[in-house]
Image 1 (cartoon, one colour):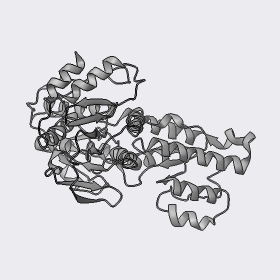
Image 2 (image 1 turned 90 degrees about the horizontal axis):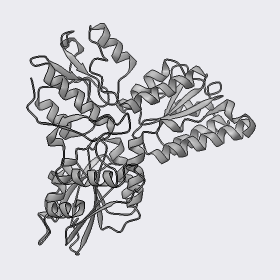
Image 3 (image 1 turned 90 degrees about the vertical axis):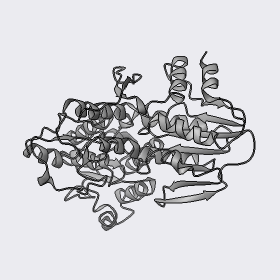
Image 4 (image 1 turned 180 degrees about the vertical axis):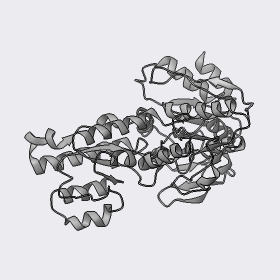
Length: 423
């Protein structure tokens, strides 16, 4: 089952400045060069201003940071290496390796099969898998229960483990909180693979509860302060907490961790709110005994992408295109930010741009596809924000940009303009 895609070494990231080998068809001739240019100009990533690509009648604004992160590139490298080194063997992905349909479809085209869907529902029976098969753990990680099941089948779950090190950092922090007898409050989506994995590992050593947003954090705060009956806790959080959770006892000491792809500012706001709840209950002098500072569990890539997107909000633009998988949590939060100021369209790729009059896009809050007419303004010059989530290949943005350019007359050659910028 060896694959025939050429490989390219990617640029290094924060962890030891490591680089990765991933198929070249995930790399971009246009946007990749712009990224490399910005990195050369600003190696310490201090300048969050967007990159402008002026093509005459159309101008594209790119966020300073977007696209594949360390964890995603690591997962792709391990998966393709497993394909290359195990010809003839059956290879399974525990679930979607990352939340991008293009990448997952590409892996499936090489014979990989998914064992579960993104919510943990089985797509095949465990009995179909043997000890001679290879099972790849996705970048989100997996639960202790699933790891134990694989071990019982004679499969080493760590041999092809693509779990993002930033996810593992959250697990380590949760374990530390448990050792200090803190209850762990997890800000995340309860059905998301990463949150399920974090909850499973946290529950091994500490009481835990999952909350999804600030409204639930505020409710939790009122329960902690006895401003709401404890029955309310069971009503709202009963299916998202560890067994035998006692809201009277277990909120004496707390710490907040997050699903690494959540909106970083919301996680921090939730932690700040619960911190003030503990101050109100126990007094400022006793805060350290009851509330743990867990700011360090926020993922660098989530922070970078969201900070860069916030910088885009200061720009003048006519619309925004956000590219990524519709089940991608980190991408959805970029959409949330941009739609505060601009008409924003969340698309998988260029195929959703039907023509200059009509676009198909995903309404994330309603979880449904919609079609919008007259989405592309006739004004010239037209300024379009173009960005993507951490699981989206840059090549998809190339294709989206070229699709838009094909609908506008007298645009400059993008490759020539990029060449002019980086000279």
